[in-house]
Length: 144
Image (cartoon, rainbow, N blue to C red; front, side, top):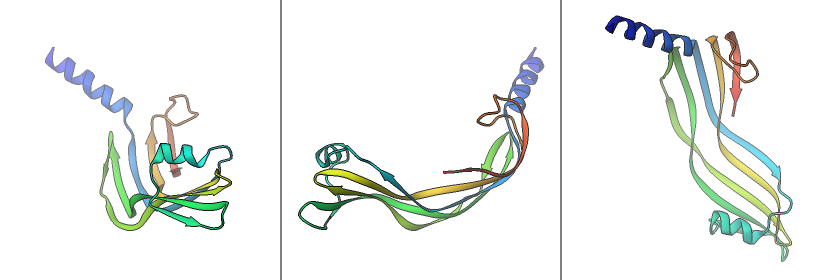
């Protein structure tokens, strides 16, 4: 009975895992979003007092929020049922958000953050759009 429970547990882990090797590249990313409609007061109520306010004119300003250190480097990993990462990362930049405000309305949001690009080669049991069907993947897996 003990062997049967162990066999079922091992089969469950094996069937739900992935096998292969991969690497994540981490670094600074920038995104600009058009944000019409949010007021300056709502922004401050949600995120608090900004770290910096750059006045452009009487009707325009940029609010800057510091979001901490950003990391850069590589993170290779081997995936045998679960990914085993080996991070090689150092702080390389600061993450922050900028909100361009005109007439007390947020016009654009610019995000400077740590993002990653992931490459993987191996067998993976599921992926978005695959409906859980197993497949072999080799190349760029995702970018965030």
